[in-house]
Length: 514
Ligand code: UN1
Image 1 (tube, rainbow, N blue to C red):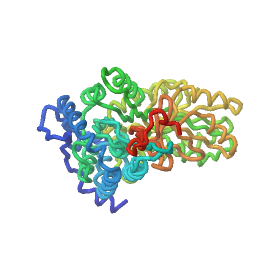
Image 2 (image 1 turned 135 degrees about the horizontal axis):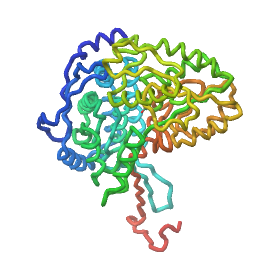
Image 3 (image 1 turned 120 degrees about the horizontal axis):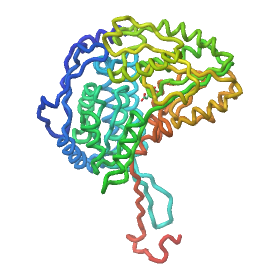
């Protein structure tokens, strides 16, 4: 990491002025400009972000519609080539992008490397899939004297509404998936991480993406998000974030009058569980639990929230877990020795602390990572904590931070455990630790989730290898980084041609009679 850290040094104090990147020039608007500070040091500013006005958002939709037919007609290979150039540019600018992920999003350097690599993988993977799916029309067999072709096209204008926890990877993945499938895109990044998103879209334009095909609209949900989701000209929304917000977007889309039936591609929350039976290896379980629950300060929708430990192995696992949690280091995300950085902002910290205090008040605390006094005062740190609860039903909502809940279960209650997990209606990630292969296989089959992990951690899905996304309250599918993802952004048109007509042999009665 040392060469990377040296390369990052020059970006550590740089101040970034970000503003909407639209098809037309945008005037400076000081009254609508917000300062951005770091989650781990509120005195350090990263720059400023000018939010998009409602008028600018409406004009951006006009420009996106005007650009759509030309972009849809651009050969898939040309569209894909832009994604590949963006991938190269992001690799080249890795030190800067990582620095921004850390300064603006509070990400650890190691998380930053994974993040940029994932964004690069999305670009290359979707470029490849777009050439396969949107290249030549597919000829379908039909009767003599008739040709049948299936032609793939874009749907129109997509809004991409992205989260702060993967401010480059998920943001970029959504935008390039929509664009390479032939749509024009209005990207609304999370307001907490607009600066790094701004940098990515600058690189995308440098890679050759026309400015009216992908536009950046910084702002918050009420000012920009709601303008987009209530506009009848928006054909679809691709969204990653909380389940509540997905429901708000869904209602806004269907409430529009004279609008097309909307497409909503949503990847939302989870109450991800792991089941550990008595045959599991306790040391391995703890390594995987620590990563799954506390990496990225638990701010992944794939993160482990509820650990089910079978009674025979529970004490041993908890003992090792306590030791491991005691060793975790909380601190500055730019420091290579740090395991757990800050959570994204004050609101997030306050919500998590409220939950922690409540469980502590019920005497449920099992282990908590020690935190230096300086971190309790400055920065939005939350110490990793583990609590005993009676069942997953004790949780009223997803706690998006470094909090682990442990449930002890008896071997003969395993069916109840599965019913309880499935019964919550979420279904994103899930883990099982067992050396009994048929037990693991049976659980994997019964659990209703998008991603099952056996004898490993449950985070870090790899593009093209572990397509990611859930079901039920956790999302609509199809899976990001999977072979079917782009098809949801596309239209299919069947063109049937009575070719015999041109040859003078057409007969009305014989048509289709072959
Ligand atoms: C998310 O946190 O929104 O599997 C998704 C993972 C990542 C995706 C997380 N590839 O942890």
